[in-house]
Image (cartoon, rainbow over all chains, first blue to last red; front, top):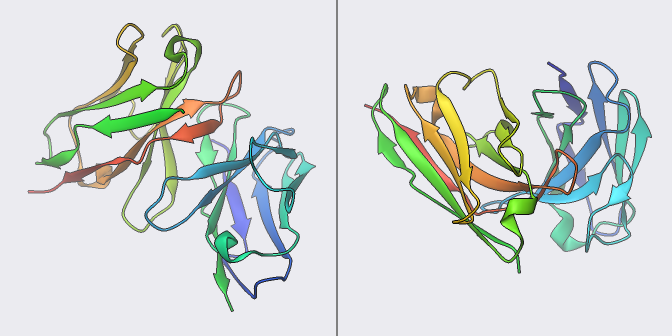
Length: 107
Length: 119
């Protein structure tokens, strides 16, 4: 089973600042990695798939990069609605697994 | 508009059974793979099970293999999860999630149904 590790666990930032979230895989997942956003009481929302492709309707301030074992989600300038928990997930093999999440909260 | 509506959650004793349903609308259900993903209270996301559009391929997380069964009825636009031998650690919100076209990601999610396993 591929283990995904996310860092930091919590990121405290102000609106307008940029955010950089990391996801590391225990073995190569090629580019088969997605990022999701989850707000309290809501279902997750797909942001990025296959490492760098924005899902339908996702603003351009969200971008993804990386391949192999190291991946990054970048939010160029935080909007108030971006404060949430972010999860990475691989689809390289079975079982699918998620990272533990990074909480982006308001400083 | 894509809609996924889960039902069937509730309180069940350890060792008991429960069947979850997910009603899909707003897309051609028979063309998409489907998944169940769960989230224990205050915890992260855990993928549970995947089924292809034709039910030809099915996969489970190790934590539920042999106890849970995923199935679908394309004529009824419905997805199911039969959960047997339930344990305390199965307590979670269970989400129905559509598989992104050709990829094992989740592009649409329901609002979830809470399953509580407790005596």
